[in-house]
Every structure is written in structure tokens, then in C-alpha cells.
Length: 137
Image 1 (cartoon, rainbow, N blue to C red):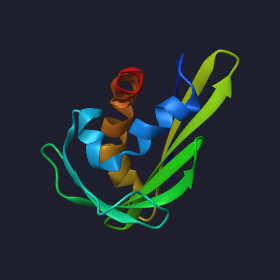
Image 2 (image 1 turned 180 degrees about the vertical axis):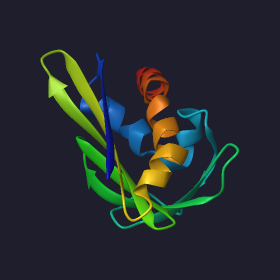
Image 3 (image 1 turned 30 degrees about the vertical axis):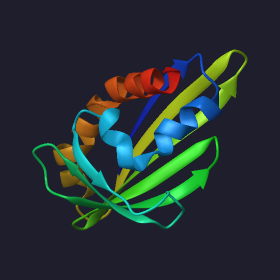
Image 4 (image 1 turned 90 degrees about the horizontal axis):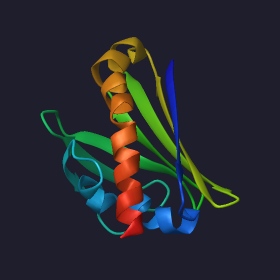
């Protein structure tokens, strides 16, 4: 198993951040590494959707957890591995602590952490700052 954690502070409420975080169809507005996302209807636990990163293959994902307005998680299905990304929005005295955890498990987790894990982790700061910008607009 491989795990990476990231945190950032926002002077917004979890409710303000929740909308753009869970607007899966428009994630390309937040993450510039996404070419497109396809999801039918609103996100609900168990819902499958597809995402294509720029320069990469189409990926199948599943909404794993939706606990409005504090926690969202999805699972990306990789050959012989799974990558789970969890976002937590924890209220603080004057804003929100945003936490992101990436976990890759499975037989080929060592390989996938090198291929996608490190790249995904490297983009979290920019992606989270863009989430804050979109939520502030």
C-alpha cells in the first residue's frame, strides 16, 4: 500500500467548498490535468463515472463516500490495484481545514504509485487552491 496526505486551509465554510468539490461533471474547471469527466446525474454513493486525464487513458471511478458537507471519497479502478482519494472538510474557528488522502492498494500498488500516485499527489496543492478559488467566486 502507498499513501500520501495533503492539507490546506481555506477561509470558507465546508458548505461553500462542498458544491464545487462534488460537482464531478465540472472537475475539469478545477483540475487542469483532466481532459473530460462523464457522469450521469448527480453523484451518489456507488455511482460509477469516467475520467480522462490529459495524456492518459480513460479511467473508471466510483463514488465511495458522500457525507455532506464534510467528506467525499472516490475509488479509481486500476489494473490489479485501486486508488482511493478522500477529501475531508473540517470546520475551524474561522474557516475550513481541507485534507486530501490518496491511498493505492492492490497487487500492483507499487507500480501505480510511481505511474499515477506521485503525479496525482504533486498536483494537489494547485488543485486545492483552484477549488478554493472556484468556491469563492
